[in-house]
Length: 502
Image (tube, rainbow, N blue to C red):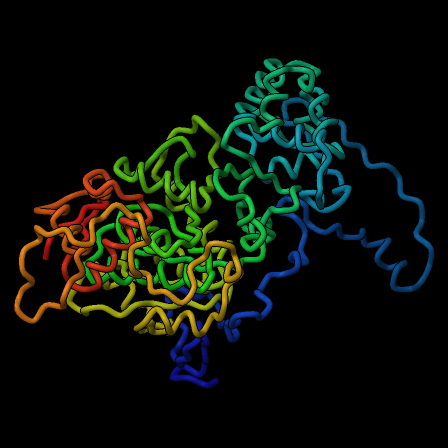
């Protein structure tokens, strides 16, 4: 489609025409983004060598014989003796196969991957280098230090770290009980490796894939997630009331349509999307920037526990990893890698949500943004996405109609046909005849007895835990009731799972 600058770009369900110079998120024109049910981009591995292993180039003499059809002449061996005073030459051997090797992996291969990935200074590219240089991570463990230098290029501080790490585990680390416990993945925290069948294929194609995933919760959710059958909802930590209400409504609508809701469990939009999803009985998926045992922000302790019980917690950081600011930005690539579509509810011009939008844009995923007051700094970034061509999202039902039924639509226990703020279930603990909320304001909608009791329990302000305690109410039922009163304009949701009267 020709545009203002002669270049047409299609994003999400909406179309626009603009010069590429006006689109800061895209480095190149995009094709039409896939709709529900369409094959997502990047479904096959990239046809290029692994970083650090360029395709071999034939010598000139051999290339000439290949063009003329003559058989290649025997080549004299090339001397690679080290020169005194110079570093040893780097001898990278051709990779014995794709990296990482296709799964499923045997237990021994999982062991060596786990062992090497725990070594300081070893990441994805250096693991690939070890695999290519020695033909296997088990053989690399037994290699002398000079071979690590010559074949894998390990020198200086890195070589010292690897040497100390191997010395600590010994020549036969497989026999140690600590490794056996690690492989067994005992306890509520589990581990997923690139060779496991449930590993999301989109993660392997990332520029910096995770070495492993630690998770807690409903393991059956990996089936739709590995196929990117989920929706990511992202936004600012300091949203407006409109942004919070929209995020909750989105989470509830997607949950009722059977879509897992992916977000980061952060303050603001992330937490609100998870709350709405839980209130509708859905499956929230939280990608953390911390290890699983850490809760950030701290007052999300209850919310994180609810997500673990009804959905899935995911982290690429092993237990005990120090929390660093960059971890929260790096999780964006994982959120997008699990999603079929990305929704930006509200964000300023400098926001991690824009990073997620950029990743979705580059991958050709449908990108939606919720319009907001042009004068609000908290929405300047999301409004800019609309100017660049993101699809306008005015009603969560528009998104649901576009996506169609989700992969969890037939999941047992998933609510159907009821709104996110449906009636409280029998035995919820709220007395239908309770009074105490006072008469409704003139023109306000009539409230049921259970709703008046909930307003009385909130009083001047209350947290979700306090409401549950005061009314002897379950978390899911209380969340649904609070959301209903919020949509009726009776309650206002504040950061930190706190509600006040309007």
